[in-house]
Length: 347
Ligand SMILES: *[C@@H]1O[C@H](CO)[C@@H](O)[C@H](O)[C@H]1NC(C)=O
Ligand SMILES: *[C@@H]1O[C@H](CO)[C@@H](O)[C@H](O)[C@H]1NC(C)=O
Ligand SMILES: *[C@@H]1O[C@H](CO)[C@@H](O)[C@H](O)[C@H]1NC(C)=O
Ligand SMILES: *[C@@H]1O[C@H](CO)[C@@H](O)[C@H](O)[C@H]1NC(C)=O
Ligand SMILES: *[C@@H]1O[C@H](CO)[C@@H](O)[C@H](O)[C@H]1NC(C)=O
Image 1 (spheres, rainbow, N blue to C red):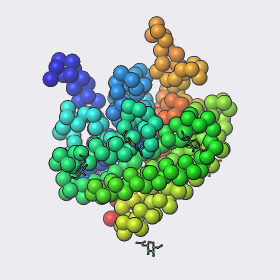
Image 2 (cartoon, rainbow, N blue to C red; image 1 turned 45 degrees about the vertical axis):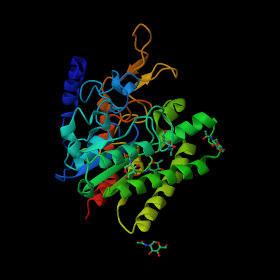
Image 3 (cartoon, helix red, strand yellow; image 1 turned 120 degrees about the vertical axis):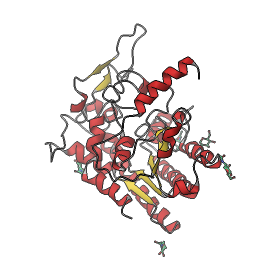
Image 4 (cartoon, rainbow, N blue to C red; image 1 turned 90 degrees about the vertical axis):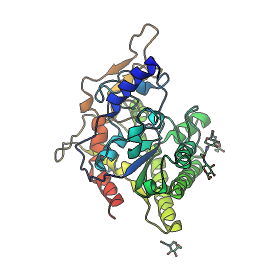
C-alpha cells in the first residue's frame, strides 16, 4: 500500500467507523443492506477529485469533514441502517480497503445517476446491479447471505432533471415517466432474481419543492406542475410494486414513503412531539452567490462563491437539491416513513 493510500485508508477508517444511533433499532444482526441509486443514498462512491460531496463544507456536521455524502452529515442510507440496528454499509469503492465491513452489505449508489445514463462516467443502476452480480459470481456473497438481505433503491429524479436538460421542456414527460418506472421495475426484479430477500424503493419526494425549483419564488412556492409529475411517477411506482409482488407470487417488494415523509416535514409549522419544524423549510443552508455557482464552489483565488447558514441544524435543505442531516433525521422519523419501514420487517 503506497504511503498516500495509507493516509487515505486512515481517513476512511475514521469516516466509516461512526455507528448510527438514535433511530429505533431492531437489532437484526446478520442482515445485509445493499443500496442502489443516487446522491440521496450515496455515502461516498463519487470521485474525490470531481464531486462537490468531497469538498468543504459538505460533511461539516458528520463526520466533521467532507467524506462523500451530499449533505452536511448523514443521509437516508445512514438512518435506514440505523433503523435496522446495523452499521452503514460502506461505499462499493472501498470494498477492498474496508473488507471487514462488507459483511454488512455495500452501497452501490453514485450521486448524479439515474436508471438511465445521466452522469457519465458514473454507473447507471443497471451497472450498479452488475457490481453486485459480479460479487456473487466471485463468491464474496453467497445465496445464503442474500436470503437475509435488503435492497434500498433510491431513484430521486436525476432521470427527470436530465430529460429536462436534454429536451428543454417537460413535453413528452408522462411517456418518459412510464419508461423510467418500467426500467426501475426491471431493475428491482433483477435484484430479486439475484436472491435479495426484500427490495424497498423510495417514492419520489415533491421535487417541485427543492430549492432549485423554489429559488424563483424566493423559496416560498413549490412548483406545482413538477409536483403533479411526481404524483404520476409515484402512482405508476405503486402499481409496478404491486405487479412485481404479483408476478413473483411474493411480498418482497416495498415502497418507502419519502413522498409523504417530505410533505409531513415541509408542512409542519410547529415543532411536534420532539420533532423540529424548520424555519422557512424551502430555503437551503448552502447556496451559490448566483445561479452560476453552487455550494462548495470557489473561484481561482480560492474565494468562496457560496453562502453558508450559521446553523445547518435549523435548515431542512442543505444545498439546492439535498436535505441536511437534520432534514433526513426529521424525514426518517415521520409516521409516514416509520410505517413504511415497519412493513418491511413485519414477517
Ligand atoms: C447502463 O449503462 C450501460 C453501460 O454503459 C449501458 O450498456 C446500458 O445500456 C445502460 N442501461 C440503461 C438502462 O440505460
Ligand atoms: C455472473 O455469472 C452469470 C452466470 O454464470 C453470468 O451470466 C453473468 O454474466 C456474470 N455476471 C457478471 C457481472 O460477472
Ligand atoms: C425528448 O422528448 C421526446 C418526446 O417528446 C422523446 O422522444 C425524446 O427521447 C426526448 N429526448 C430525451 C433526450 O430524453
Ligand atoms: C395476480 O393477478 C392476477 C390477475 O389480476 C390475480 O388473478 C392473482 O390472484 C394475483 N396473484 C397474486 C399472488 O396476488
Ligand atoms: C402538505 O401540503 C400540501 C400542499 O399544501 C398538500 O398537498 C399535502 O396533502 C400536505 N401533505 C401532508 C402530508 O400534510
